[in-house]
Image 1 (cartoon, rainbow, N blue to C red):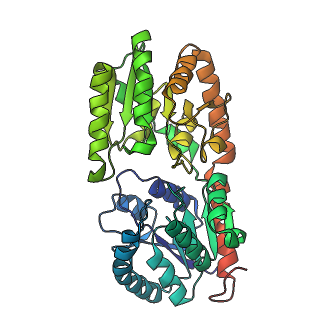
Image 2: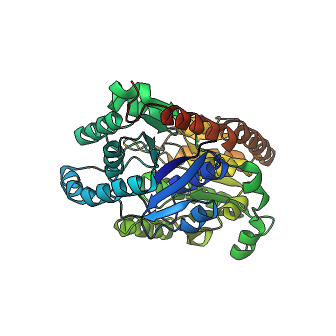
Image 3: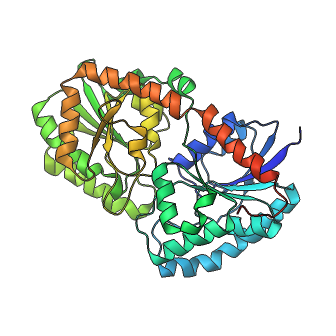
Length: 399
């Protein structure tokens, strides 16, 4: 069996990265006899050891990346810094005799340029729904569509977004859901450790929001909903799990901390910061809440939802973006409108008053994850893309 070399490009280095977590699950289930894995990443990527444990060959390159919010000045700065990345990646492709480049987040254009210069197939993985569809964003989407041989989106909602921005390239799109190995994830989860850490006992009802601390993730609405619930139910505790991804969001974190005091719920809310034991934290919850989304920003998938569901947790989330593809409203959780603290609070209260329904939703959620978001299914779909591309004549683009 011929072994093909795939270069995965991971532009970001973050302590809490859904893109990294999802790629790790893909690599764990990938056929390593058929595919040799190489990864280009920044030197400070905290997932390096986990990638190496799966047999990945690591190459440190300071990669260019385009952020979610794009302005003209962003593009000007980007033009000057992507050249170095493109040259380094091209040399890497040639030295390692790479057969295919897979960009794990559609923010690095130098990787695409390097792949095209080397005349090898290119896969773009779209993991976000941009907060605004500016003229520059549309141009970028159209350009990546031109360069790519195949474009993978993590939800149908993401596919529709890309189709609207770059309609000429819809034939290259393929939806492959993020996946999770439910058995291994659940087997090592221990919520008792977290309950002991925070002083929860059997009577404590714990509701948690797990997300980076950025405005569109909606933690402020979670806290507003918590105010009324805290006054009604003395045994409810609320966890805010996560932290800011960069210093530019410090004012939002301070806003949340001030809001807790203003609402009079400081003794009922715990800010945990980033956690490496996220499965233990989720296991300690009675309900997981994902209140993300706004008029201009949507959740492309919501990885934490499938993590909670595989642990048998009922979830409350917003009905936007890719979330309705994960959560069946009324069956595996409850969906509410974005930015609606009243509806959010009512959904949490509904489940609080119906503990048996929480258990039933959790069981159905686990079954849904095993059916739709299992890694064997998703990785086989990914390998189909690879087989299709490496068998094409060198440099040929899909029509």
